Length: 368
Ligand SMILES: *Cc1c(COP(=O)(O)O)cnc(C)c1O
Image 1 (cartoon, rainbow, N blue to C red):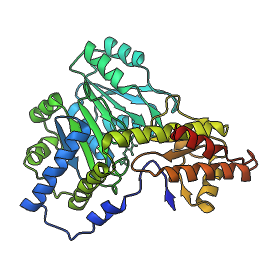
Image 2: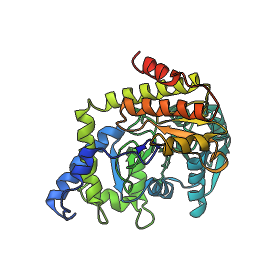
Image 3: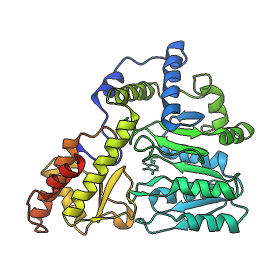
Image 4: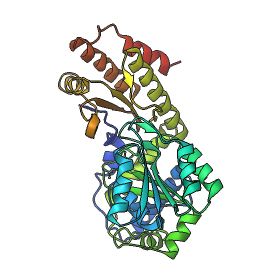
C-alpha cells in the first residue's frame, strides 16, 4: 500500500535500518555525540539560533510555545483544525486569546492581523500555522511577521511549521519560534517534536521557564550540553541523523524543496485538468487538497483497488476532501501512479471518462 497521506509519511529504508541498531543508553558520551550531530543538522534546517527536541508529537511543541511565549494576550489564526488547536491550548492554560477565524480554504490576510495588532496593544503573541494542514493552505506568515514586527517588535511570532519545515524554505527573519514534528516532512515515525528559537525567544525562556515536562528552560540548559532533561528518544534521534544524511545524499535541502514544489505544482495542474476543484485559495506545497462530493468514494476505490492510501478531511469536510501528500522524498512515479488511479476512480464512478489526462499533464508539468 502506497502511503500518500500528509502525515504520517513513509520512513525511508535507510532510516529504518539506522533505527534497527541495538538500543544505547542516553546518558553516555556516545549518545551525546549523536545528539550534538542532530542539533547541528536541525540548526541548519531551521536556520535559527537554537533548536530544541521534545519527546512528544507536534502538539507538545505547540503547547510548550504557548506556555512560555504567550503572556498577556495571544492572537490565534484559525483557518482550520490546527489553528483551532492553538486556541484550545491557550484556553487549557487560561491564557487570554482572541481568534481570527476563516473558512478552511482561506488564508488569513496581512491586513486583518495588522489591524488587530494596531488596535489592541495587549496582544503580545501571534500563534499561527505556516501551512494549515486541515485544508492544505499556505498563510502569508512571513509577510505577517514582518508587518507585525514593524509595528510592535515585542509581539512574539509563534509559527507552527509542521507541514512547512523540510517542505520549503521558511524565512525565519521575523519568526521567534518555529515548530515541527517528526512524522511529516522529516520522514520519521511519530514521537519527536522540534522548536526553532531566535535570540528573543531564548531570552524569554531563560528569564521564565514554565511547566514541568515541557519546561523549555530546563531543556535549553540540558540540550546545550547535548543531553535532554528526560529520557531522550534515542532511536528517533539516530533516525533523524540518518534522514539528514539521506537528504544530503539525494542532493541536499535545496533540491528537496525544488522537487517538492515541482511535484505539488504538477499535481495541482493535473487535478485541475481532470476538472477537480483545488480546495485552498492559496495551496501550500506540502499537499494537494481536493474538494469533491464523492471524495470518500474516490478514496475507497484508491485504497481497495489501486493500493493508494490518501487522507480525507476533518470535521465538516471529513467526507468531501481528499489530500495527497508531497512531503518528504516522494518518488515521481508514486505521485504519477496516484493521479492515474484518481482518474480511473473518477471513470469508475461515472464522473469522467478515462483518457490519460492526469498523467499527461502531470508529466508535462513536472518535466517542463
Ligand atoms: C500534524 C500537525 C500538527 C501536530 O499534530 P500531532 O498529531 O501532535 O503531531 C500540528 N500542526 C499541523 C499544521 C500539523 O499538520
